[in-house]
Image (tube, rainbow, N blue to C red; front, side):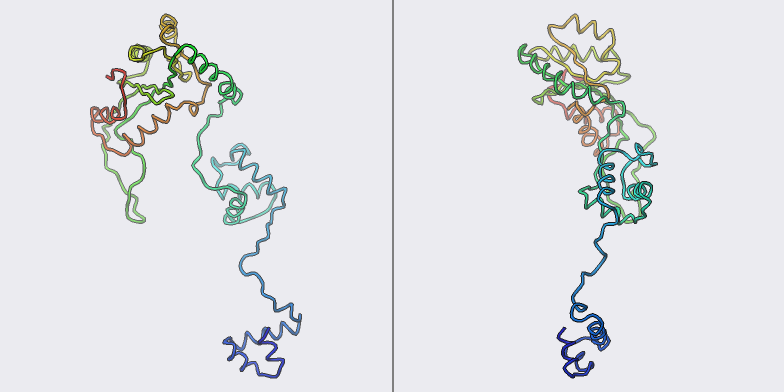
Length: 308
């Protein structure tokens, strides 16, 4: 504004440009703007991309609610996860509005979404059964355990192999590292139980998990436990087999079995133990033989149930 006032006061545009340290072209442009629109034409304006939102509020709310509550394939889109491209495509299909993936990313950030690794949950899971378990069944189990001086155990099984690797390794930019290995892989299986207080019992075994293996673990578990055992497991067929049921009923003064809702591994804390062993005991090491693999798995155990 002062430069324009100097020109209007009689100074040449060249002198004004030299005094204010700008180009003569800039001074000339300011003068022309002043002549067309007066002082308001010289007010500073915000630079960069306009902050206007092309989606209307109800449209933005619908997209945000869809990303939060549904997966892309549930709204008939060929994507497994919500990415910027998937959101861009959904906006195009739903409202016939074309936005770039960068605009879609800005929308997601504005709505409070961040990229995260999702948890897996089976379509077959019954939410009502899960609520029933959390609100009614498990509190009843805890109440009985306190009354009968029983210990609650959470049980599960898993298998590990020598060729399992977890995490990342460093390599040259643009050159994917190669981890040499052998096609001769060996593995072993483990069955374990974890109490609410962190007491762990486990057994390493080879071959298929069946009723005999499960009963072997139950015998050892009851033998090493001071009081009655309330063992909570999933609904795998071996756990509910007739042979196991007969044995448990015969020894119900020492042990009882309880079953989680179907397709609900996230309710079982023993799953976290399995992940820890696979990721840290095996995934970040390099066991070469079955014995080495068993040694690393055993290294996570505390007071094993006569591990074999």
